[in-house]
Length: 469
Image (cartoon, rainbow, N blue to C red; front, side):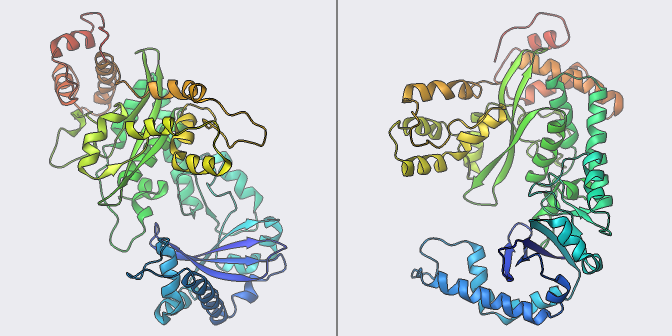
């Protein structure tokens, strides 16, 4: 279905433009309307809409052209693919023909703006001939049947509505939304029933997720096929962002503080990892750790992949050398970036300097504290606000970064893995457990420890723990 995003506002004159979407590998139609605009009348003349798109694109192109092009034909300020698409659109009859053809097919409308209940009801006959994504904010509704039923009750006149769920980029039919919610809730209820500690829950879900085999979307398909929550649950495609999305969604619903750690790449599409703040009194493991379910997932060349926890609960810096091999990098795992972040802070920054500094280090300023359930490290200064000195600022952030500087206690981690493997073995005898399995797991963890026998004695209750990390 061709997506149409409608912005309803009393201040809006009717305005139409095409918004390319590189993630979905397609584009959508964006329309500004006022409360009196009839969608049926507007869409009765598809050629007029296409003409409006071309006119809008041409004016945008003229504005961009005024910026000038460099000798290679690229914009001096490195305009994005979206802008180049507009340039193609303004002078490409094929693109316009494709858009006109899309407008003649099924349409899926979503809305934002003011008094949407009334506007949808005023256009309900036309909308029911097409499709409607029920308004639910930019991030979608929470994964609960109660939230879904509540949203449906708000729009009783909409037939066959679509739902945007947290974890999805695109909306899905109600049945798919229910299936997605039921899957997540079913997994969470099963895990809760096992009465595991926080660390054991993280291990158990990690093992469930990585039993999915990596599989990319087909050429021409939306990237969401292997990344969107509903697509990966109900389909058979999954890549790194999909592993992270599913892992994060389940653990968040179990009450864990976990978030995605996206990595930029110099040579490919990038990569997705997760970071989690873990507090487990049973095993005395506390800190912020990075895990990579993708690199630990099912591999036909490694039938014993489940015995590998090499990329599980590591100090973020553990991945640094591996990442550099693949051209991957990110600010949180980079000690130099963290040092620069601290050293570049100045109490007497101008507002412009603060904007530049906060923009440069926005991941550190927002992601880490949010993971710990705190606010941003520092906010934009107000007119008379006294900013912390460099010493005070360092004191504010020191404890966050101390959490990054350790691996979990290895013998305790092995003991937790052993507990989980025994549970998994009961459910599925093909999953190995016992001393031999734990010896393989220990060896593959690449811990750098040589006392495997001593660790195994501790794991199986034959000696007291030793404090090694």
